[in-house]
Image (cartoon, rainbow, N blue to C red; front, side, top):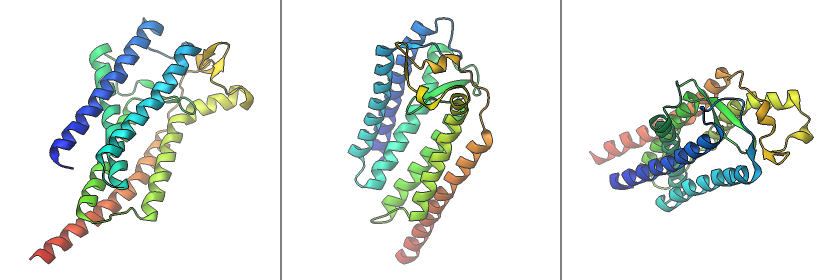
Length: 242
């Protein structure tokens, strides 16, 4: 993919971010006219289900652009996570421009809703997004340099493990709230004609930075491994071309 394609992929992701932030502006105008804060206000089922489907649809669109742009599985995955990361970063950029929110990079936010509520300080998903961008760029460069490039089993394992640990860092506080206050049978989204009924009693108390940093360290291992392979391939190519 040439520079022009990268530019258009980035512009598409930024435009998607604005659409996402625009929806949040509307929702906050309806449910948080005095400013967003915890605990969450229960949302009517119709709007809440629409919001869940919208989240899923957003993922499909970001995945779709990666599949359309990429030529190989590696490239498609790389372009997907690149688009996702740019989208996530600019989502907060636009919220700051439109609502002057968040107040700081450590302000808590609802990050995702599937399968349960993800929460964390704003800086955490931004760090994750930067990591994703670095990973995407390294993979694409390696794919362009090495014909039939494939990730090693070890690299795939570490990427999956790091991703799971990252997700756990975002859900662990809310998960702890659920298991402390409710039976498993009560863990449903719909409650008394509203969604996130349990969330109405939830105020974030702790973000485990050690778990999050562990996830970043795990993710750094395959990134370094891919980069070293790329550097070795470039050096080998330069030696053979002399």
